[in-house]
Length: 469
Image (cartoon, rainbow, N blue to C red; front, side, top):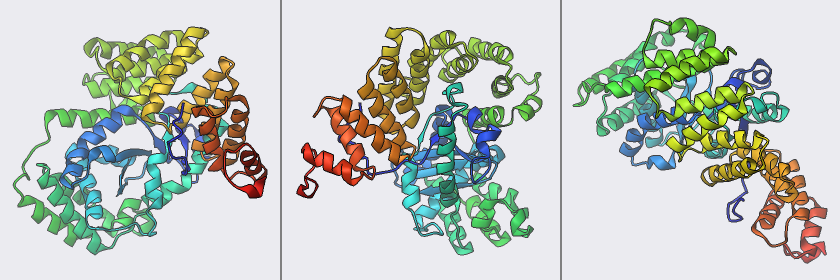
């Protein structure tokens, strides 16, 4: 149940599919920016926060108040706005060390610290990013053919360009470099990665604009700027501070996971069978799953679990593979295990909830509803959770709640017209003045109600306005 106190005067931008679904050719083609999509993955988001949080704290920003979003794209890009940090997968895959990635993050936070604004002068788009409703890597095949989800991606596409289109002058870039170096030093981190990252792409300076990465169009490079940055960071006390072995390993795991999902054919070659590192084995397991060889994938996941039986993301992956390949009953146990190991991760609960409501067992459908509602207490605007909840209530014949959940889903993918229609239908089936009924009324009121709708609401006293009576 959505709290009636939750504000609904906002339009979420998109319901995003899992990586394996987002990158299907049919859906990718539907976007205005091919191959660009919003992605949710608990493990990667957690690792990105570990990299970024010391920088946020150094800047006087509460990390809990910042949403890190992951954008699936071959573009090398990142940007920061109030309460938002966006990182493109292309950037992660091109950074050699966690310190390089931290350097880029510090540079982007440096723009904020210096008061630089987006080229468009419109930060409202950035403020809307945390409202984007997504599903995570674990919710898979059920939406693979969803036209509604494809429409959600189309809805979101214009925002990717707006959000990543920050353009700065060379002077602003230099100031952001200096601010970033200061933040890294204050956080006890080396500035070496910041300087090395930009030096690695020094050659972009001589390219014609159409050949450059977008990041280096919006963030223009110059040799003078790079050399000034190198001199600054080399003089700082933490310059020689190395990346920890754990940080290096986690960076490789993040890159391996993305390679496995996004570039499975490449990953099979890149991470050879004789490479026994965890990251290589992880990449191969995911790649075989993406290449539709579930038995090979499961064999490799089980081998990893033998070494790391308390890794929630391996259990998530196993459940994900089993669910997608039609083995829902077998998917339940690993998904339960993933939730037990990481109970504060709403995306893992959504995976479990989806599986439970897919089973032909009334008790498990009820349990699945409970898991989805728990997830929604943490992410009350997760569109996919609302869609699955609507399906579960429909299975139980609870028409009013099913229609309300559908209204929430429609609202959160930006389909305001249908959100209003389903909210009005929900009100017909819900008990008047209950929290659910009031929530449906709230959705109607913020979803461009017709004059007839307003007249009906006024007649029953739900709103004031004698002009409608």
